[in-house]
Each structure stands twice: as C-alpha cells, then as structure tokens.
Length: 228
DNA sequence: CATTTGATGTTCT
DNA sequence: GAACATCAAATGC
Image (cartoon, rainbow, N blue to C red; front, side):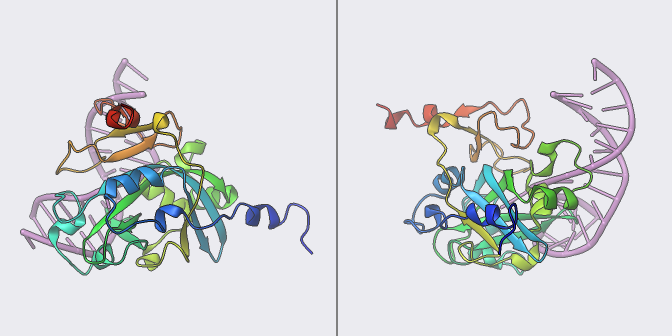
C-alpha cells in the first residue's frame, strides 16, 4: 500500500538510461557528448534517499592532448577511472573540500570525460536543502560542480561506478534544441582557457555564474554548416 | 551585480 | 612548496 503522496511520484519520474550512454559512445567527440548530455537527468541514490536534476551545464575535457584535462598528466592514482570504459563516473576531490563528477567518454584508455557543472533540481528538493543548509536562493543549491555533488550526495566512493546502474545514473530527458544551447570557454582553469568547450542552457537560472567577458556563442550559430 | 579573500587538504613538481 | 575543473562571506557598487 502506497500512501497518497508517498514514493510513487518519485518512482514515476524514472526513465530509461540516457541514449547518450548507449549510442556510438566510443568514437564520438567528447564535446558532442557534452552538448547531448544537456537535458538529461542526473540521479543519485544514497541511504538518505533519491535526488534528481536536469543537467543544464557541462564541460568537455577531451583527453591527453587537452592541457586542462587531468589525463594530460598521464595515468595517476587519482585519475585511473578517467581512463576507464565509457559510461562510468569519474569523481575527484578538489580544493580540499569538494567533489566533482564526470561522465567518462571515448574508449578505455583514452582519458576524456564530461564534467557536470550544474543541474536544475527535479526530485528530492527537501533532501537537497538538508544537505545545503546555507543555500539562500533556490539556484544556489546546484549551480556549480561542487554544489550539485553536495546537494545530491555524490562522493568519491562513487568513483568508477557505471552511470547506467548507479548509484549515480544518467537518465534520458527531453533534448535541448540547438537554439537553446550556448557555448563558452571553460570555467576555473588556467590552461587552454580559450577553447569553446563549455555548454549550457540559455537563460537557465541554475547555470553557474558566467564571467561577463565570456562572449556567448549560440550552438546553432556555431554549426551553420548544418543549416545550409 | 562585481570583485576580493580565506578555507581546506590532496596531488604533483 | 605550488597548484588546484570550488565555494561562501564580505565588501563596494
């Protein structure tokens, strides 16, 4: 017996794993996967419950030839799962305090991934507020890579786990049309600072603060060859 | 809203 | 020792 207003509404939101994780994942450019992850649902299950959010901001870290990618330093104890098979989580600890979560792309051994930088909360809002008691505004819950991991309970123990089977799962969502996607340089890095590898949903309040000097580029405008 | 600064600790040089 | 894919608080608009 499920009481009205119980777990049923949460379960009803579950969908299949995102097709982004099941299509030709091995040789697709990481920046393309980053763009396609916009609109999908990030889910995390812990002993405290389930949280879900719509991915609204990502960054591509393309591999050993990308100076800003952790793979550029070669394989280390910290980044082993970055070199794992596509479709697993690469979770790392940064600035002594925060976790960040990536979706690994490309073939095993390549070392590329998509950083999830922001989500728009969908389920488990009460739990997110409990975990982030200092968030004053709603958007402060999840408008950054460290914040969303705190709100959703994503931690280093989840490093290397499959994004199809959990505890962190990427599920299908309504695709974001090209006209609603913008591109900018990546945030908070000191190498390869000009590369247009950050993707986000235009005007979404949960996108992390964007420096004014990051000139925004429409995804559709940047791919005019597809328009003709 | 923009800018500045301190916190915190692991990783790598 | 320095760097680090960050955040929150404090300050000045």
